[in-house]
Length: 129
Image (cartoon, rainbow, N blue to C red; front, side, top):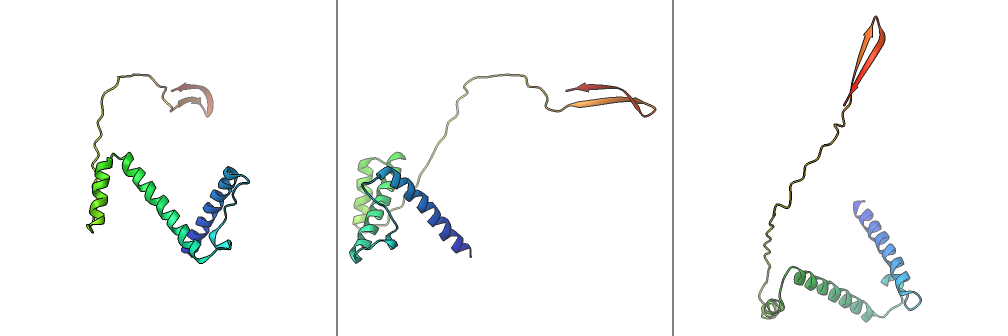
């Protein structure tokens, strides 16, 4: 049951993405689900290759943004080509520096009401914050 919900959610997200892509591409292209498109057997492999290349390029871009230099990336690729297993370890450091001191007064959000009554009748009320 839960897996059906996940699949339905995925299809819904993909359909919304396809609508946005149709707007961007206009009349030049017509994106659609691969299962609904007439294609040859090798087209599935081309689609898988295209998506895999896009995912790999995205990962490389992420590593570059994290600071992996080109020469280090080439070294990693060389190790992989030689059959070595490569894993990455990340280390982060944050520093904080005092900027300024700022003081302000704020009103107390609580409100206190004191009522004075004589013989059951309210004679006065004092409200303070």
